[in-house]
Image 1 (cartoon, one colour):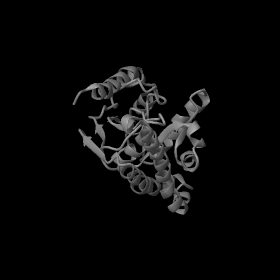
Image 2 (cartoon, helix red, strand yellow):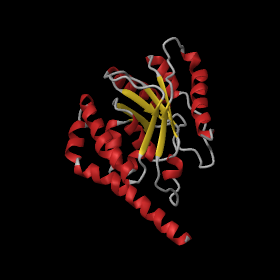
Image 3 (tube, helix red, strand yellow):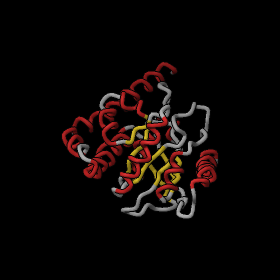
Image 4 (cartoon, one colour):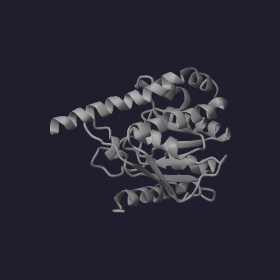
Length: 245
């Protein structure tokens, strides 16, 4: 029985990478075209959301279910933040937002074959060991916000160890939201760790739930309020993850 589990997990992982790669190869010319200029990003986002993320989620047997306690307004910019435990987080984030957004992520992901090629072209990359890189993120994010896009950051700053429910949050997303006067949108991914964690021999199909919590406005906040804001948002996500409902 144990042997069959390991065989399933192995095939499940392989199938995930197949699902990731197929849409990229199918729509490669369009993805290249729409990634040439920043102003052409919305069509790229549409393809990523509808022809990449959705097929992966459903193809993995992980149909998404999103509960919205407050809805995003079309054309408005937001700072999207969520817990990070799985590669499915990227797909589920794309699924839950029709508003085009840009990921801020670590530069190491560019090493992933196929995916990394487009990741470095359309995302805001950060080297967390470099102060200069972190400073540059703010400038690039400001330009994208001025284009009417939103920003998505996983504020744990990486993927925590499996036993950690929710790691401490970094300041970046909250400092940036206050500086640009955009609402923070806390999002809890409730099932992605057990559906497809970063441990190779793990995971199984099932519904992947996400909750979009009420937004935290930043209009009257100053930079000195970033820590309070950070902890308030983290508490919302942590309480949801530890709730028995």
